[in-house]
Every structure is written in C-alpha cells, then in structure tokens.
Image 1 (cartoon, rainbow, N blue to C red):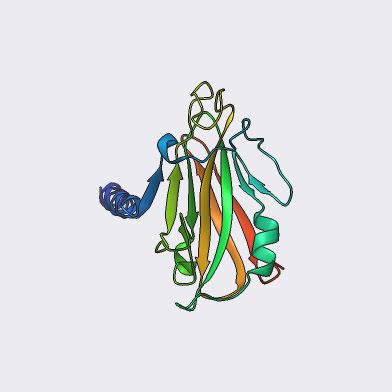
Image 2: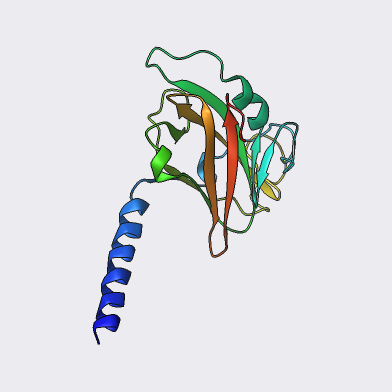
Length: 174
C-alpha cells in the first residue's frame, strides 16, 4: 500500500512539474512561418544541423563565430529552422543551461527556454509565390547566450521521441 501511494505521489509531482514547464513554451504556428519567395524549402542545407524532423539552417557556421556581444552583454546567433510536415516539434534548452542560453525569435526578443514549432500542411498555399508550402515549414529563430559553450538542445517530436544534439556555440564540443 505504501509503495502504491508513494508511486502516486511521485507521478503527481512529475505531472505538475511537466505542466508548469509547458507555460514557458513559446508557440510558433504556421501563421508565423517564413517563406523563400520563390519555392518550397529543402530540409537540408549548407552548414545545417539536422535533428530528427528539425533542421537548423546555417547554424553550424553561425554558432562557430558568435560575433560580437550586444550592449546587454549577450551574443545573438541567428538561424532559421525547418520542420518537416506532420508533427509539431519542441526545441528546448536543458534546465541547467537556461541561465546561459535561450531561444529567441529575433535579436530584440527576450530568450525563452523552449519553442514549439507547428508546421503547415504541405498543401497550404504560400503567400510569397504562386505555389504550396511543401514538406518543410521554415521559421526564423535564434539563440541568445551569455557565454560561449557547447550546449545540448532537446528536440521533442509530438507523439514521438526526443532527440538531443550538442551545438558548439563559439566553443568546441568534446
């Protein structure tokens, strides 16, 4: 009886912790997408970091150099993310690194620990050219960092698994 009660308490605490963290998730839906102006996006690209159904375009190059610090003392690394059609994807920073790195939509945004990307249906009409969105929805995105480092990101697929990738933001991953 005590074991069953203990398991129920642990489950309730875990559910409460998970629900509380869901409030910190910024949602990016199909209406906040970016388009190429010419044709559907390809999933892979030069210097992309691909993790499950998510592809961080040009992140390998952008993260390697970091550039200069902004007046607030943080670095901003711009990237775009492509999400394959089908299921939503949540990109999150591990809790222990949230004082050093966060996700942003633009350089002026305050960082958040997680962003949920909800891709468009492939047959959705594009607004910047005469055609359909296609199999990949693009979103502008970026990271703000207080210092260089090798930071792990979790990419959780709705109804599927969670992938982890380590990104070298101005510092090699060993």
